[in-house]
Image (cartoon, rainbow, N blue to C red; front, side, top):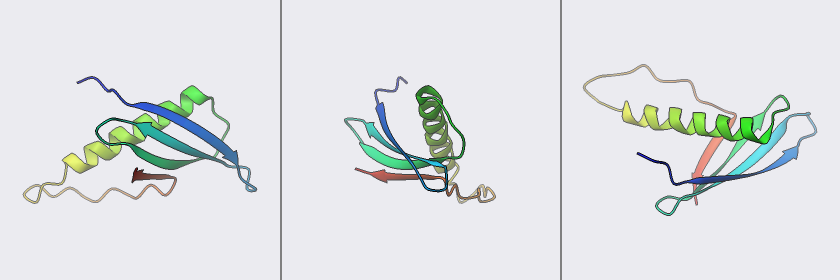
Length: 85
């Protein structure tokens, strides 16, 4: 299945020295936006790959919601937030 979504980002350096990344996922079926906290300097390509990786991990977690096959809860990711647009 081919992904048709486009990810655009804006960054903001925080007083703590960390970088806050606000991202938009432009998808005809389900547009989304979110935030990622980056602790070290990264290129735009690395940030987008990190966002894609975390989105994929979240999709896998949603697929594992089966009441007949309990999976131990996965630790929350407090550096990644995702919302529907």
